[in-house]
Each structure stands twice: as structure tokens, then as C-alpha cells.
Length: 258
Ligand SMILES: [Zn+2]
Image 1 (cartoon, rainbow, N blue to C red):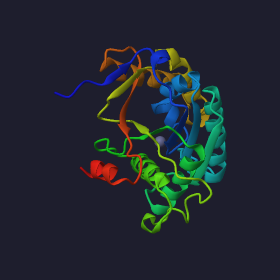
Image 2 (image 1 turned 30 degrees about the horizontal axis):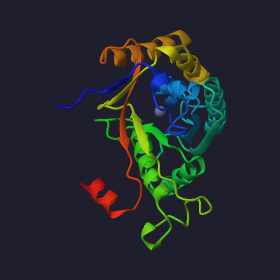
Image 3 (image 1 turned 135 degrees about the horizontal axis):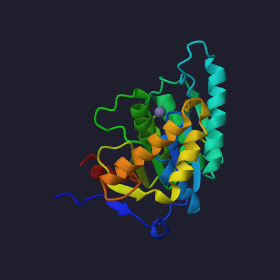
């Protein structure tokens, strides 16, 4: 029988990674989906960076709104939401909303950021969540994990784009672990009761995506309650955590391909 998920009720006793990179598709993904845990990490002293693949420039029901103006608004909202959780390092790659792709240029751009931030922990969408309908979310998860692999590689003839496109001045960096959110196979669950109010406040900082703030707040709380109910907690966020292969050693590769 599979062991149940690891439940983290007391974050103070949890070993906190020193550097964390969160890769997402849109402004508000973190706040809607994993912001309670990010707040726990920030409170515990982790150095946290966000990499936002788009600026959410299509995220409006108004067909006449200028996408560039909307993108600028949403970037400002994302920075404000990050600041509420104590996060200052927010980078936007400015792909268009709806056009996120797990392709070589995007992998290279994300890998370059991995080498710059040098995280111990990568937080990203679970791209293997069954029947994820939102293509940007699925692609964002795929590209984050592919980039982690590229970012760890050393320059060499077998490494393709590595060493030419990927931050040639930044040395390779192996990310030890990934936590994938919006997952159907949770194995790591955090009690977010201590940070639910921060999570809601950060979500509401995305004012352009909160026409009904009270309804949005209720939705954030209801999602945390539903996740918690599955694990005997009042309010929770769930992840699929996995160790990432360190580098290019044969043993690692055989293990990875097993
Ligand atoms: Zn999204």
C-alpha cells in the first residue's frame, strides 16, 4: 500500500530550503494555488523568487482592453501581491497569455533564471495532473522541469543549447527538489491555517481579477478547506514533491530512466 501524504502541521519543525524559485504561467497563480505555503516559506526565512511566464495580458472579459496596458496593470498587481508575502524578486518573461510553450527558447530562458536564482527548491504546476485543461498551466509545469534539467547541465557537445543560450556566464546549478501544485497525487500537504489571511490578502491584491472581492476570498478559503478536508486539516495546500536527478552521472541517468 502506498504511504499517505506527509502532513506538515508544524512548519517551525520543517527543514526550510534557503532559496526557492516559483515558476508560474500567470499573475495570480501563486496566490490562488500555493500562496499559503509560499507565505510559510517566506516567514521561515527562505529567499523566494517568482518567475512569471506571461503578464496575464488576456486576462480580462473586456474585448477592447489594450493587452499591453492590462499586462502592465497585472505586473504591478503581482509585485504588490509578492510584497505582501515578503517576496521582492519577481521576473516576468512576458510571453503572451495563452501562448506558453514548453519549447527550447522558453526552456533556455527559465534555465537561465534557475542559474541566476540557484534555488534548492522549485515550485511549479504539476504538468501531469490528469486532464488539466489549461494549456498554459500544463506547459508551465513541463517547461519548469525541463529547464531544471537544462540548468543543471554542464556545457559540452552533448548538451545542445546549453552553454550557448543558457546563461553562459552562470555556472550550472542542480535543483534538489520540486514541489508541484495543482496535483492529483499529493504526497506533501501543508497546514496553511497560519497564513490563510496572508494568502487571501495577496490574492485580492490582483484587483483586476477580483471584481467581487468577498466572493474571491470565500473561494480561496473554500479551496483550502476542501484540500484540508481530504487530509484531516482545516485549511491546507497539497503538492506532489519529487527529488530531481542531480546531474549527468551514469548512475543518475539510469535511475532517472528506470
Ligand atoms: Zn493561471
